[in-house]
Image (cartoon, rainbow, N blue to C red):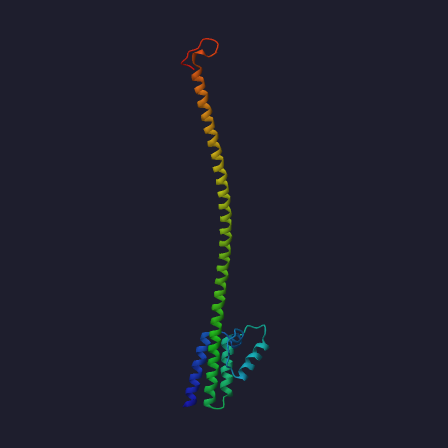
Length: 185
């Protein structure tokens, strides 16, 4: 009855792992995850990956093979339980490592996008600053020209006033030849 329950438990664990379809054990070791696989299981996974380097290996199949081989090599129920615990710990580390790697990849992409946007904004600020400086320079130049023209207008108004006063003072005794009406001038 105990071996029947162990087989049922093993079968349910296998089905759940196959449904998850998560990363294989060698993926977690590449990501820096610590695997607690027994030596025989690690050798078996490496042999399988070396046998078919170009073929796409289903991680679920690899995990199932590891579980089956470890359970077959178990000498007792306690040995089988300890092996199952080590395999599940390695599987958990693999899951955590793959999730962490995926999250790091997502964060790296987000960081890269943020850095690109930051660079674009810096360039835009530099261009805007240059334009503002050019605009300020043109504004100062125009203000200087306006001041010059105001001074010229003021001098011309003074000159015009002086000439009109000169003309009034000259009056009827002016030396303009010919008949003229004084109101006209």
